[in-house]
Amino acid sequence: MGVFLILSIVLNVVLGYTTINNLKKNEALEDYIIQLRGTIAQTITNMRSLDDREMFESDDEVGVIFNQLVEEVNTISTFLGEDVIEKRAPKNRIW
Image (cartoon, rainbow, N blue to C red; front, side):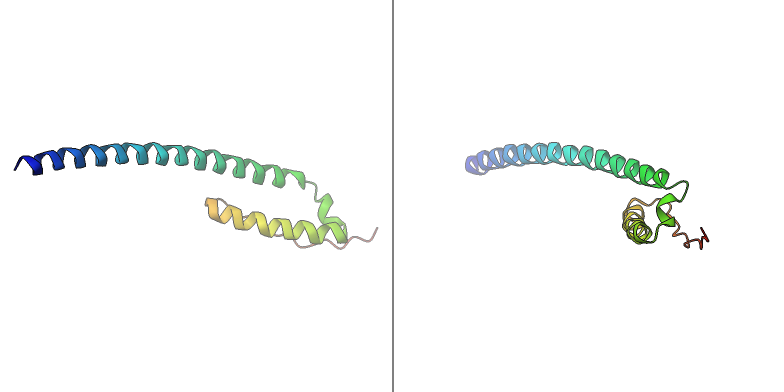
């Protein structure tokens, strides 16, 4: 009976240590994810404000790349659960 008591105490100490260790790791990863989410959200906001005058979309070559960037940002926005950027139709400019 004494062997089971000693074995139980040792096992409880080991399980307690591993639980606390995993809790610390989990909290550190949660902090990282929160920080990463904020950084991605700020990047999306910055990209939205870059083309507020639709200067990038007016150029044919840059417009294609910009639309591809918009698609990538939409993927990230969907992951974050935010509103997705609308893909604007290119304007036909005469000049």
